[in-house]
Amino acid sequence: MLDVEQVRADFPILSRRVHEKALVFLDSAASSQKPRQVLEAMEKAYEECYANVHRGVYTLSEEATNCYEAARDKVASFINAPTRRGIIFTRNATESINLVAYSWGRANIGPGDRILLTEMEHHSNIVPWQLLAQEKGAELVYLPITDDGLLQMERLDDLLDERVRLVAFTMMSNVLGTITPAREIVQRAHAAGAVVLVDGAQGVPHLPVDVQALGCDFLAFSGHKMCGPTGIGVLYGKEELLEKMPPFMGGGDMIRHVGLYESTWNELPYKFEAGTPAIVEAVGLGAAVDYLAGLGMEAVAAHEAETVAYAMERLAALEGLHIAGPPADRRGGVIAFTFRSIHPHDVAHLLDLEGVAVRAGHHCAQPLHKRLGLVATTRASFYIYNTTQEADRLAEALEKVAQVLRRAR
Image (cartoon, rainbow, N blue to C red; front, side, top):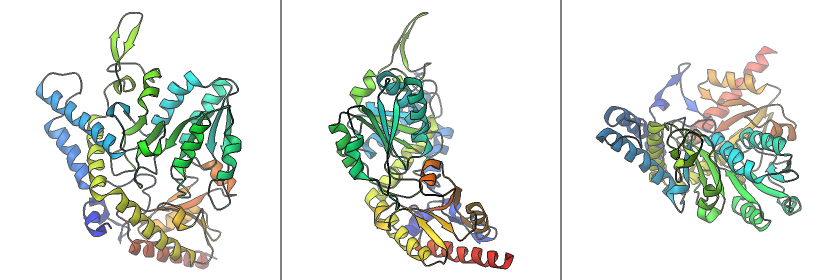
């Protein structure tokens, strides 16, 4: 199990006070906080060995290149990728998904083909496929969910007909916290002849991930949700697919030879990394991977399971509070809820006055909210630095919200 107090000591921002109250940060599903190990690694990169990468033969450039490429090796090890050539650095999970849609999708999806998604997807795993389907004359189909936020797996084989070329789904819902049966979906999709992309934006920071055991063709995730900086994300892809895909963007570093009228492309992974990359951000991501690997992802998952189970029990006892999604043993560290007749934005504002930071809105998942008959929810999301005492703070603050509402009436 995690030594949570030691973990908390690594995050300087957690010592802040908000509205004269100790900060309770419960919005890690949007973006996690950063440990000092990540902050110091990035500061050191800027102060001691900053230069552009892959371009210079002088000492600083070679050192910067080594640091940048070392981060790629760390990421490959973290997800057990079979080769570093399949680790593409992007800006975030959204760009990773768009890369696949623009490059693989435009080369392989045609009129009458189908792309299978689920009803619980983030907009980043819906909109790129909508654009592709509209351009190519393809069709989107959706695996539905149950009222309690689980995938209707009994419907999967019916939807996986010969027209489905791609299956794209989330490893963990950013609203419901639902942990999907990813390996089973990948296996059944492959049996039907489909390529599979997994949106790991919520899964990779919170669960042990082994892409070889999972078997997916593509995996997308972001650094900023896993203790790393913004501006750096990852696309893992199987080498044989990436080799056949055309470049996503053109420019420097992704080329081998440029003439006036034609060019040839660099080897993997650089074929998909045009221009000056996010060098120091990659160093920060490497430090974040080191940090999480040091904690152990099994321990991370176990801590969140314990914390969210406790939090759900506390919140369920509050009159007028409804938690969306599955029971605690089927979800990660995310709890989206409605509270009495108070708009989620008002709930979030009143919680902030108590020093509790949560997210309110549709969380970039409007189709999911519509499926559940909701316009918006309040979302509390837990991570490695959150405690059961902070779950108590959330519950106590919600009780104060109810008191404010009663007084207002």
